[in-house]
Length: 262
Length: 213
Image (cartoon, rainbow over all chains, first blue to last red):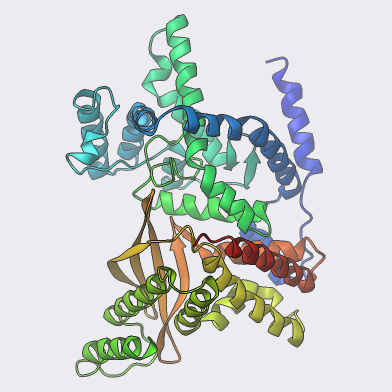
């Protein structure tokens, strides 16, 4: 706690220093765009993207590439399925909190079938044999359905594009996850750490090509990412995207690897 | 190539709108829109997969299909948004030329990737009075299929593509945000965007030249 407060103050200071200048009131179109972008901390966020990309290039990308090279595809599929299955309880809670009984039924059925017939979630037999495909939900989406605004756009290293609502949602996701509270001791800590690490690696591996193409094809990668994140989150909240995997690390808004190359 | 396609679109249009409904010029029609996307998709896939033709020939075929099917003028102006009126007439013309080129090269620089591509039509739904969304599934070798949704509107009495939506992301919204950001960060100079687009086209041309035969 004692170290947290100065750290928070430093972040706040950076945020304030990094505020975008609001366009003058006599330029209504510029002002409208400023509101639409919803990014008052843009200079700070751009710096954070630079920080993220440095970490990404030094650590995440090499690890993701090595993972793809070393681990054969069927194993990677199994890992992804297990991670998705482990997230099912949180997805189920959110389905229910959103009053989506049909989707809640899908999630519960998938969890039961994949945990048993799918050998602990290694095989997604619910999708392949029973035709019940997975979907993802998180507390960020639930808060949105309850009427919470997203708040200003934020880019956070490692986590990626976000906002206060989705960040709070990620914390709630962890708190609501039964595996967070399950048991104690070294074995459990190791298992939890492994799960977190594998989630990051799995997600980054699925995003290798899409993000690379996005960055190469964009004249302003930062602006493109921001636009895509906000549009995707809106579509996810409205359940307009049904093909996303359940293994998403959090509500990052980016594909969890189901549709992406693996 | 243009003759049968036009006939097919026309026939579909006549069948669906001709006798039954009174002619309402700007109202999009579901059947007509999906027939139009089917035809445009077939034309594009045929052009991409025609490996006997050179890359340049294939690009010309793709360009012809896109010029006919996409509301390039309308989409281009939408994307430039508030900067359109701030641009000089010369910059506007240059922008439209570069925008069209970007659209075409974006596809032609990926001929290798899209080799053997197939697509199938999904459901079609009316979005607004003058706006229809046609779902398609794009399948490529070695990668999972992905969904692309085409927004079709009637422009000048013809169905035209006005937007492409992938994974809940609209191409024209994303690109508007991107272009506007480039101009804003260069002190409102539209010329800076034009220079960046020019450079991007050169990069895409270089990638296109590496298309495996």
